[in-house]
Image 1 (cartoon, one colour):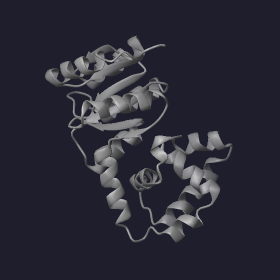
Image 2 (cartoon, rainbow, N blue to C red):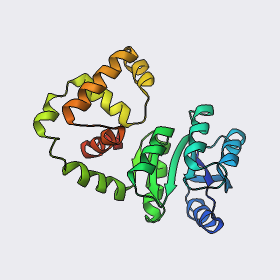
Image 3 (cartoon, rainbow, N blue to C red):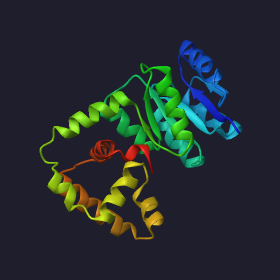
Length: 216
């Protein structure tokens, strides 16, 4: 069984060494490289072709969001798992938009980090339980979202929202469903209107509540 190849991009040397110890102790994970800045992370990805890049958001030179966007443009098959102390929606939204497959907090226990790595390596998405829990609380508190609105979504609208929550662009969703981009945009707009949504982060919140982030 092949190991999950991980590249660590983290600017704090102590944290980086700790991550290498945690990951290196796993029989199914191999740390193939590490770096302290985003620009080198992109270069090392080209050289080493890891399965996952564990990407810190706050790094000098090229930050995690910009490095992720560059990396996904050049190597779309490589998964990025954001690693950060930031719980704010803005950071999460930036990383998801850049193409990250997961979002894990540095303050979470090692077991959750390992779970996130394995989930992303298997093609899944992962949101740290603390972030997901806060999202669920925030979303549940919005009176505009009701069971009635949920039942009004068509099967196609649900399918489109699910794929968008998973990080696919309108064009990618259109290609997967064999529809035009204009049709996808229409389904997305209709679904968001029915659910009282105003942004992509709302779609992600909704996906968390529905349990969509665990399975494609």
